Amino acid sequence: MPTILVVDDDPGIRDLVSEFLGRHGYSVTTAEDGVSMDRAIADAAAPFDLVVLDLMMPGEHGLEIARRLSTPGGPGLIMLSAMGEDSDRIVGLEVGADDYLPKPCNPRELLARIRAVLRRRQEPGAEVAAGVIAEFDGWKLDLVRRELTSPEQVLIALSDGEFSLLRVFVERPQQPLAREELLELARGRDADSYDRSIDVQISRLRRKLDGAVKNREELIRTVRNEGYMFTPKVTRR
Picture 1 (cartoon, helix red, strand yellow):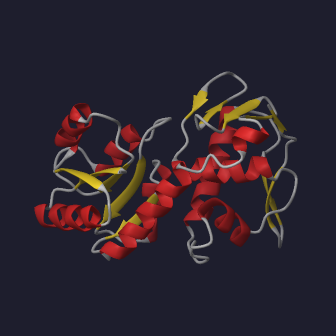
Picture 2 (cartoon, rainbow, N blue to C red; picture 1 turned 180 degrees about the vertical axis):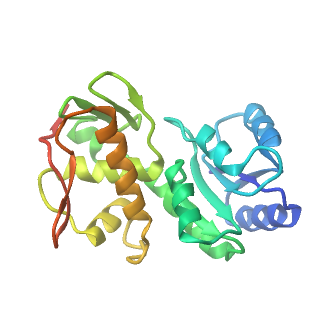
């Protein structure tokens, strides 16, 4: 049974989301702020699979909490906020959230987003048979541990969305991929073709790859009228 931690200072929302997700087969724990979230994580018998996090809470801000949670091997993260502007959504994705929903949100939409994030995290697929380590231009991507290591042997934190996107690129190197194709391959056939978060994640992934190693050719290139292309050669072992 997947485990979900709901962090929101509104008890009504906590109860509503907890009850709804519980009816759909999830084990749900709730917390009212960052302090009680940390306590719940410490007391849990196993790591949570996903955290639903409110952005605006008293005490530690949701963005700071998101930064703490966005570590290699950390839980999936869906951020909720009453601020529905595009800039707020972009900030949430920038700090490592896998998805972002404005409040109030339809519980069924939240459920669909949770299922999509968890499905991406549970898709080792054919990587084991094909080789669990993808190497490119000095980088190493462990497809089982979901870890990215730079040529300088620095572990680069990836959100779940960033990992899914990079996995698509290393599986299809040196070929243009349209935005819609990237969405379907990274998120599945139920992905919304109008979802602009894929653009944010590509931008964020680019900065992590290009910023970690200076003076090298960009690894993700924009191909005019076609989409994006992962430029290096990729080997698997």
